[in-house]
Length: 207
Image 1 (tube, one colour):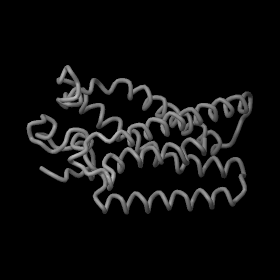
Image 2 (tube, one colour):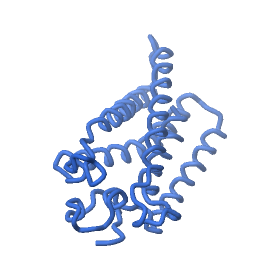
Image 3 (tube, one colour):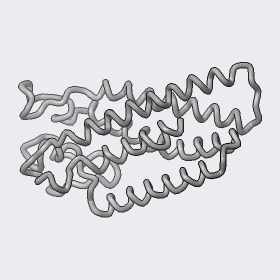
Image 4 (cartoon, helix red, strand yellow):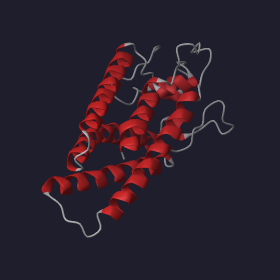
């Protein structure tokens, strides 16, 4: 669970937010950099797989066991995180069609930013970042409940601080580029450029 929610899933979220346009890419002359999507998918699927294995081991180990209020709280919050992780993977398959000039159909949920696509982006981003934030407390509580060695909590604490510093630095540098412009560029002929970007702190270099 620590591997999934403490390492892989937060990294995947950071990649999706800040790596849609790389500094050496030459955007907007080179569009639709596939790195962020491939890395995000590998990291999130690997994280959910690790989470699932951890959940199965925890479920087997808890059969017939009681527990204090903290144990029950950790279990309930942990299962809620598992549901969020599985829902995020399932939701990824419901993101709609892509469309755009590189698609022979042209029309698509993402290219046209249909209500379906807008709802997907709002839910996916909100649930994903909320789950990552909640996971910090759930993991810390789990280490306390398991009476884990103190160095583990210290190492994870430094790791989460490093992630927070990286998030803040990349956000200040304007690296959170709108997915739509990252893929199709800033030309106003594209329908998605005529509506505001989805999400907090998302930047459009050209309007």
